[in-house]
Amino acid sequence: MMNRTRYGNRDKRRKTNVVLNVMIAVVLILIAAVGYQLITGGEKKQTSSSKISDQQSQSEETSEETASEQTDKEDTESQNTSGDEASKEESKPADDKKQNEEDKAAEADKESKSSEWEPVGTEQKGEHTTVYDKGSADWKEMTRAMSVATGIPEDNMTIWFIGNNGSPNDAKGTVSAKNSDEKYEVTLQFIENEGWKPLTVEQK
Image 1 (cartoon, helix red, strand yellow):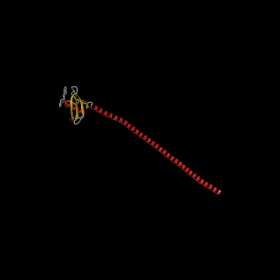
Image 2: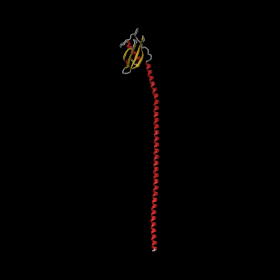
Image 3: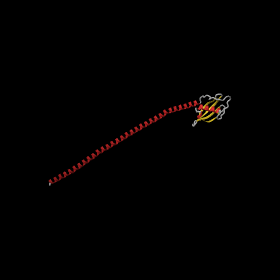
Image 4: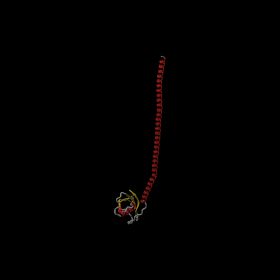
């Protein structure tokens, strides 16, 4: 009877040990699984953090490069603008100089047309009375004087007007070359025994 009791107790202990061993094994497996998850999860999190950090660094570098490129572009545009303005400033004096030269040339041309001419000569003798009739001696001599003053040949001249210019021996006429719209006003003065003398020429 005692042997059976001992055998029963031994059998219970063995079963209890098996159950405990199984439970310990399960706990160890669970601990290992949790530890593995913690380790691998931390690595994934660290990897993710590294990726985010790398992305942020790349983004910052890209932003810096973009800002640098924008600055370089603005500097280039500023230099181009400054260059254009400098070119304009440089060309402005040249334009002014050219305009001054043109004005001087025009003034010289005007002076040449207002320079001293000699009387063209006359066949009229004695006291002179100006006659403005076409075909008269005065008409012919005034036409000759206006041709000398303007450089327009008599046979290519259109006479628009010849008349008194304020005194008996002062006259003026308006002429142009044939087939030309450029008209010239010539003032004349009769010099006794010498004929009509051109005084001024003005382009109308």
